[in-house]
Length: 610
Ligand SMILES: Nc1ncnc2c1ncn2[C@@H]1O[C@H](COP(=O)(O)OP(=O)(O)OP(=O)(O)O)[C@@H](O)[C@H]1O
Ligand SMILES: [Mg+2]
Image 1: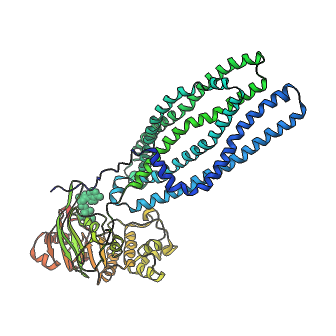
Image 2 (image 1 turned 180 degrees about the horizontal axis):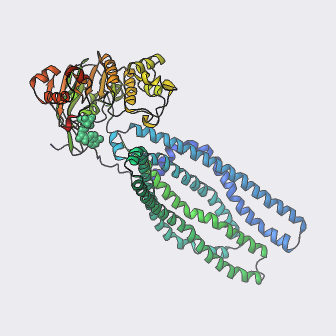
Image 3 (image 1 turned 120 degrees about the horizontal axis):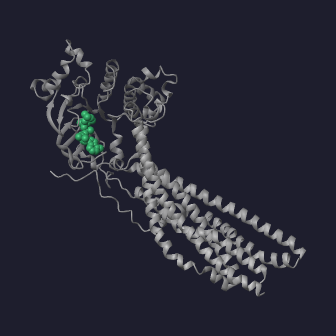
């Protein structure tokens, strides 16, 4: 059987989208709404940019009439005029910066929220391909990098263009021949700048990837801190981290170096320009063809024009760097879930849960090989079998975290792929093999089972799942925080919180994946009773390694290698003397004289170890 590769879908070909396309999308989807404010910023930028030209222009009368001819009345006038211009520049500059930065922050936070929203729609496969740290880096790092670059690029594009134009006007008005001499180097810069673009984009992309790997590594280190300490892997981990940091540093340095190269080229060009103009202009002043004021005005403009030109020459570098982040963001936004509701969903019926010749594989590794069974409505069906047999996979298929490669999973006769996805999940309460607790109070963690549950219902669930038993002993009771991922609770306590959550959910289908595996004998007994009460009237599927916990099940399915190899009730299976009977004998053997009592407190003897 050749199963289609489900874990590695073809990558979205978004990497090579045209920059204009990506920027256009960003504009339409996130920036356009702010256009009135953008116009206001543009007006302020125009004012700020023009002040440079005005200041350079005023240098001429200052020299020619005030300093050279000694017109003292003009001194005050010129002083106030220049001070006034600088004041206007300050106010306009402050205003436009505030507007641009605040729009930038808004756009970035919107983008971050949108990214998270979108990520929540994607299925497990995406998260298996993209580590948590790398995704955090995209949502936080790339959006922030984009904002910084976009803000400064916008300011440059607006203010510096105007400044450049106004200064060029002053230069050309003073002497067009000097101006042409000053600008003779500009066309020479074109090709090197274009060549640099590619380098910058490539290096920035690599640097962002390296940043992702850094975040991933940190995420894994902090989550695995205990096993790192116990196995004394601190040094090994910090060395690994150091080499990743070095890789990041290398890429970032290369990116920055190529970015810095363009302004440097501008300066080299400027050196040539000054040289040429001084040689020609100086001679003309000596000959009396030009006034000192004109010469000073021209040079002030030439000096002032360098900054905007430097920044403008860097503009496309910034756009390239921003594009690297933008590509990574749109790669996330373009990713589509593979599991979603059908266009016209069928109504979902309650009824038997059935698997009909279901095949499933992760990549090339077949996990389920023609699994067929029916779990009757309102009854309890148990799944047992060795580790890796595919039991948890059955729950993944039922909740549609994954879809079968072939065959059908049905509820009440309707395939799960034909019903509305949220509807389907609304009908299921799951206590998973790994309890997912969030860094909130015990109370809040239970409430996640049903957000509109009343206080009394939450307490009742906490009571039934024996959560109160330990919570009441804590200083803040149910309000006690559980720590990151529930780390402040013991394994058994976490499991009880997860059970309380499932109880609160009050769903017709109950999926329990080794729900009491981490509990001590006494709490297991209590919780087991509560679960038995809960499962009454619900279609319950329970996975267990400890056979004692499922002996009362209406049907027991023994799974091996993705198939059901035996089925029947506890008594029937014992009588038939197959796998189950052997497993049972093995588990009872370690339990001493009283087989009945011992079975109820049986150890977690994993059959796969046999
Ligand atoms: N996300 C995944 N990606 C790739 N392979 C997976 C993934 N999840 C499970 N598998 C593989 O699928 C097989 C069945 O896994 P499953 O979790 O269903 O086993 P199980 O019967 O629940 O085992 P256990 O009793 O240890 O919980 C295993 O061989 C496992 O390696
Ligand atoms: Mg499992």
